[in-house]
Image (tube, rainbow, N blue to C red; front, side, top):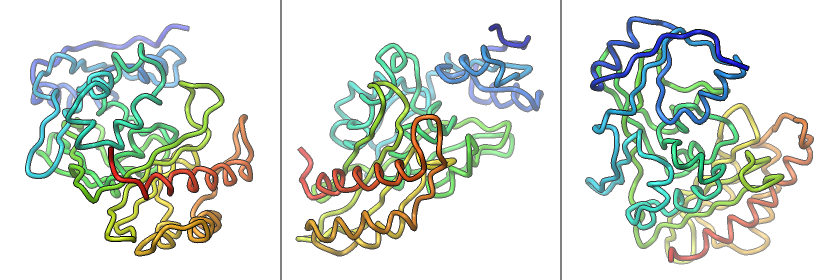
Length: 286
């Protein structure tokens, strides 16, 4: 199938991209295009204008700044996968990146594009939420910063206004007491996850602090399992504690059924993943 007709414009700068988007309420940003082009071809999306921002070098790069790791929205997923700064400062992202589709997709797909698209079964939005990160956004009204907890609103819905451009992803850099965990279950490698979990915490002696459990593939958007977090917070991990945390997931998650799994199956799989990931949170970063 071919896409519906649309106009095309190549942005010369971030300000130019915002100006172009402001002129067309049905415009869409073209970054990596790995999700957008597919939806165009299936006519699930029918924008009247595509604004190509691929030439904007100001939106690329990975930098350490003020105890954070800043990732330009146009940074390719493959570049991030090979980055020593990502491996050292954002090990959760490093764990998740190889699970995203296949190398051909990661060669073109961008970090910012995945987060802005906000697929409920995607890995990177869950990593952003699990790490308590934030994003910088530019639009006709100026620039602002949005915390991850406030960014994801619903099915493919975020805090981005129609004319906004996501410019930077900011994550707290890992420290010696940081702990992270990641796991997902798929039918085949490269498929979207049936259920996935990205997690972070801080090891304080024998207990965990600041536990964040971000599940994906179990709702309209990635979401935190706050009751399960409470069961792990401030406690030493043992088999009994992990079982209790897994048991309360029924209060945190209400996954809709799909063609691959029932709601009950997804809840069971979420408990399986929590048990696996909780053990990762008890291990020091390598």
